[in-house]
Image 1 (cartoon, protein in one colour):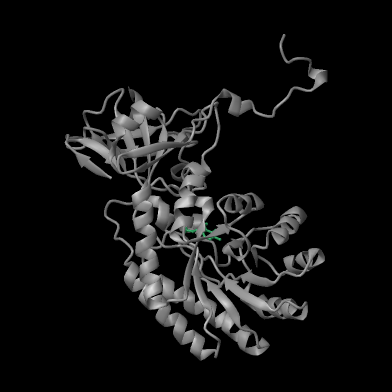
Image 2 (cartoon, rainbow, N blue to C red):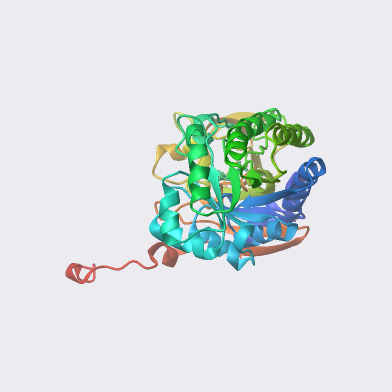
Length: 425
Ligand SMILES: Cc1ncc(COP(=O)(O)O)c(C=O)c1O
């Protein structure tokens, strides 16, 4: 993103042009930024540990165009559901190029997951016998909760530790791998996902050490080698204006040092090192272009835009911060405003106080930054305010990659049972 003569550009296309061509609100993804993010991260980790692979966690932004960029860069897919496995298949990914890290799986999830040949990453020991009823997977992985988790939005995206719903307790890890080995499974991996959006580079070697101590002991005692160890996602991006960036090089160096030292401590054959980031690849490469519809001066001065909590759920859900820019006005003096969307919910008043250009007025275009991860993917229809369009930009090229929803999308598949008549009076 850059500002030229006051106009905000995403890639080589201006926010005004986006609004004019595609309407508002519209999610815009910058292909070059996604590729640059991937390459920076891959080069850092693979430099220190060459047998390294990324699996993109498609939950963060599942637009097939965006996913295809990461697949093209060489990423496998981390899928949270069978539908995400199907999405991966539509992009040419199959078998062990997919990590299936589902949670509280149904029988259908297990059956279809097995059929797909994806690597099963079991969130609990109780799922193993259920999987074995359907067949014996080639390779199995367990998601370990190492007892510690952290995130930039507190408890909300802290995915490990005593209060998390995810993963095996360390005390169950030995039994889990033993049961899998006894069942005839010969190939193993191990996984964790302790937290999201961490910009402190010391966190990564720390959690690596925790996981390796747990699985290293199991590997040594059971005489099993791990083909891979997956450290999950968590590579953070700064959301707040004064927040430091993650020192990726240092994180990669420290993590691989810790990884190698634990491999030798436990006498393991060197496994492939995997990570499955999402936010780092797509977070700062995605924007929402919206419009100011009215400005209200009541108890507070409130700017009403078409970007509601249904468009971007993170602020209402987690209290997350997103920077907001006003097109052509960023150089103007500032005043304090609140900012909201159009929903009948007060949580839609998602910025309570922010310094924004005092000259902001109806019709202005606003741009929300860092919206590429957990943005559109968490959007929903409420109050008949439907999901926005998605556009991909590469330099001055741009394309609609998902149309804006219409009334038909809101009622698709619904019906009124006979006993209610037509529903019309
Ligand atoms: C299992 C798993 N892997 C990877 C990710 C991606 O995490 P991040 O966006 O922090 O990189 C998530 C996110 O919640 C996840 O649940």
